[in-house]
Length: 265
Image (cartoon, rainbow, N blue to C red):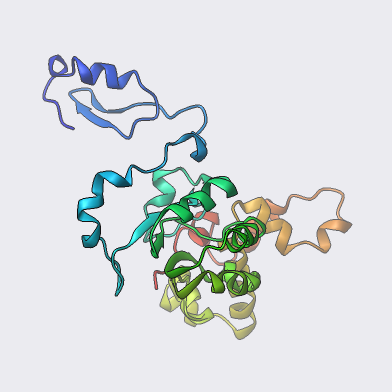
């Protein structure tokens, strides 16, 4: 919203500016202003169920891929990763919230046969995801079609998720976000083609492994703990983040450069 003068920022707008947590951005002669964030994000179970009856007359127009009508169900919201093609992490500040298992099961039971799960990152917590799958089966829920969005590394680390969820729908589609199709592509993305081509085979293999760990870690310290899991036990002072940064500096990299770019695919 753009206001030419402060005198126009009045009435309902002034009231809105006193409400924290609004997705509201105003431009005034003094510059851009926004409402402060809430002290903590609202739990998803506190939000009311969608008023799907309000769009029932247009239900047949809701479609995705080959399927219609399609219903939308949300089991979690947000994402801790920072993919360069995605705005979700900026919108939610890399936060991640989940609905209770019971609330999700009730929601699945209330919708039709074709479901698009709107989670920004499905299966983020494998243990909870397995629990949810079992709860849906116990309730006797099976859909004609299900679509979810997730990361390849999550499925690679926890392949049992596919086995647990496959029986829940006749057809099951997954949208994957890919970092790169190969280690060479990953190195080229981060370093650039010229710099990547100058690396010895040893450095290429080692750096590619480090980058994969960085991209699947929420913080630099977490990545350092994973990368130095053995040697850190022998040290009196374990500054894992500093050790990782010293390694990255050899290649002209920092933490942001290693984690901010993820290729869509």
